[in-house]
Amino acid sequence: MITYIYETIPQGADEKSERFEWKQSIHDEALVTHPRTGVPVRRIVSGGFGYTSTGGKDERVHCCRGSCSC
Image 1 (tube, rainbow, N blue to C red):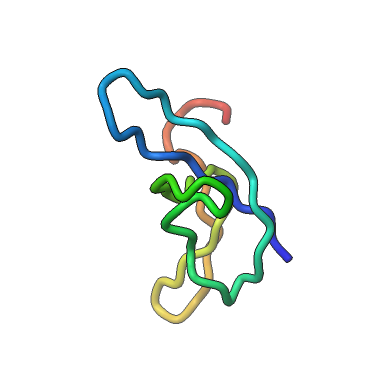
Image 2: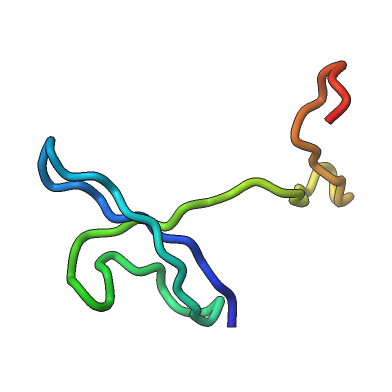
């Protein structure tokens, strides 16, 4: 089971979004509504390292490719 971060989608100008964690299988579809309240939600994608395939060879993708020291 993976813990995903979701955020509610405000329905009015005076509403604030709220983030919550939800455990689910990687094979499950992303939630579209909050499981307890029914409010529309979106999944948040956070940083980290990933992999990309270029020319048949996997290469590590870093947060930046500039001269900073990240």
